[in-house]
Length: 128
Image (cartoon, rainbow, N blue to C red; front, side, top):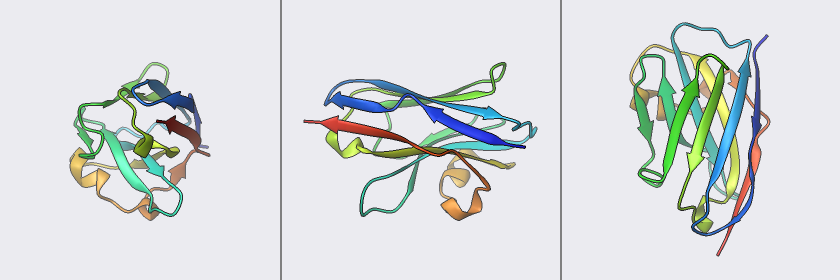
């Protein structure tokens, strides 16, 4: 049984940093897409960072250069290092996963409904 559990959210001032973690227990697919989504109030859920099984990575333009996605295979944990945070980064952040073979950019543009495995979300609030 796959279970995704996020942690690491919180409240920071603009310019600060946070590191989100997603413990992906039971997720053992050889080919995969692991993605961080975020959803701000009144907005659609958007994929901001993705890593696929061949190591390919892709970011939304809004976070490129500030966020870094990584995975610790030994711990089966996904991370999102967020630096230079801005008030517009305020959102609920979710990790999601799917059995997937392809490029990271293609996976990031998939709709949220196409991902069968989700965490419960962790709130990130950035104040100005």
